[in-house]
Image 1 (spheres, one colour):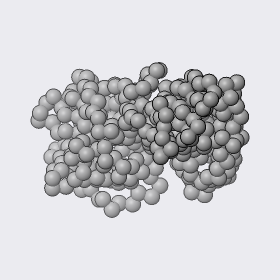
Image 2 (tube, rainbow, N blue to C red):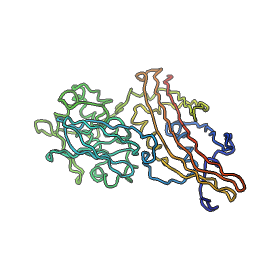
Image 3 (tube, helix red, strand yellow):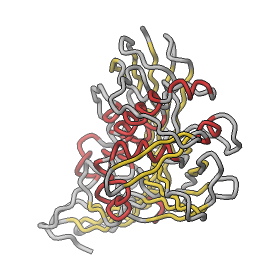
Image 4 (cartoon, rainbow, N blue to C red):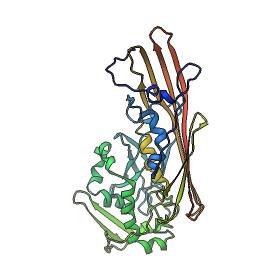
Length: 398
């Protein structure tokens, strides 16, 4: 088909034409690597993913469900335990940012596992127990991994979002933009600070312990024994909650408690005085781009959830399929770019001391196919697979 001059489409060819080389078909395919000075992962970590599609202003032809067009299905498992002390068997609903729901069930031991595929996060999670006398519980996940569902994950969400929590399933597609893991961590820290002694008694470090992401078994030992000791009730319409101990006595909760030095889910305790060196290297089809080195201070993702909140949020905003074409009266074309696979990794080596490394990698596979023709010349058929990736490492240097 021929695109009209007034049809506002942009393309890889327009974005990078002056700095690309041509392949054996005469099509410019080699990307430039943008030199970016950064103080935040949100710039350094995602620029490679966004510059191909988002920066070029292509036409988004699908919703942001990455699995809908994948030639290689994404295997992204979400697992966890549903418990109030005793395990809970029930129906679990996981809603993605398109407002679409993935349903599963927890087993008799309270565990569940489900493949998120390419469904975009973050995700709000709700469980309705088979035993109708038990309360509905909530949880939250930025990506794949562990998402437990307990009265304390529900309390953290309630403290953060209160009246929005129970109604969020009907409006999650728009409401999720106002939710963040960082806000949730602040409320979580208040819970840990209020129950610091009790958490320590059951073997958990209150400064770091994450009710959402730390795996546990509903076997009445460890953190599950801690859950056994409390009952939490919620009145979502009145924005009220109440906590009692196992004997039915009220438990005071101070919402203004000091949470200094609480880093929920951290793989190590961050140090505001530390300096970290960031090394970031992009690749295109196995060819390494120019390594960027900067010194962003202490703004690093000290847990995987913080990395996922940046990485997956940005990647899932990239269209899974897009139409691109160079606008010209002498050119006709029909070219599509399709995501075929996404991967990421995160790892910490060390405990926050000098020399600690925080490493990760992101990979984005896509396929471009279609045709391209200049007037008076033969049509060029296009079928190119590409792999964009970046590797990054923060090293504590002082």
